[in-house]
Image 1 (tube, rainbow, N blue to C red):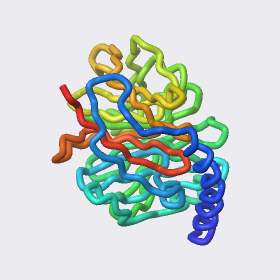
Image 2 (cartoon, rainbow, N blue to C red):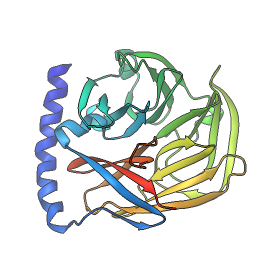
Image 3 (cartoon, rainbow, N blue to C red):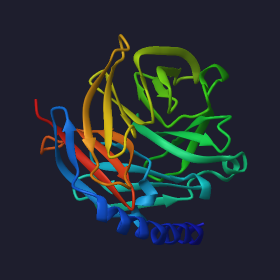
Length: 282
């Protein structure tokens, strides 16, 4: 497994080195295009390292848990990153259990830490049986898995999930007009919260102070973060960030206040992988 993972990372690095050279000729600096937000720092990694956390992000306040996936290579990984220094302190590659891989599961998504467990969205190759997989954050071993109930599957895509008060929230990636909910105690379907704006290219979600924040890959260089009121379903645009690079794809989010005022931490992926932190200015 380790040799396979290393070979995958080396091969992808060579490919993205060419993309980086082309993209670098046409790219600028990252910035905030709209909204009361400013960049406080950016942790930047080569694709060789960053491929192992290029999809999603969760945190316990001390460590980022980065989630990586390359679907067509059936490569999935979880990486621990020191939240202060940006140092990679642990990594588990090819982390999907073999029985799930045999069933066609191939792509981890964004997730969250909840009561000592790491919950991640998981899609199968044909988008027929999406589910949620649970890991021990210390060992990075998979400890549980549940498929979504039929009435909550939608189009079979689940790019993110987050939990609050034993309710698991999630959505599909495109044509998102509702936020679906599961009872974490038995994974039964609780219904859906209708939202008043349809969202596209949704990549990640996180809850902070009773508000659901959703990040998208909804543009060329510019990516939007929305806030969803979990009581009413009202959607507002929080800010628009410009990645500055042609090769960047917006991915998952973690929310954690840091000493420098940073609150939102978002992954962008291209020839290099970046975790950019943002501080509200109002």
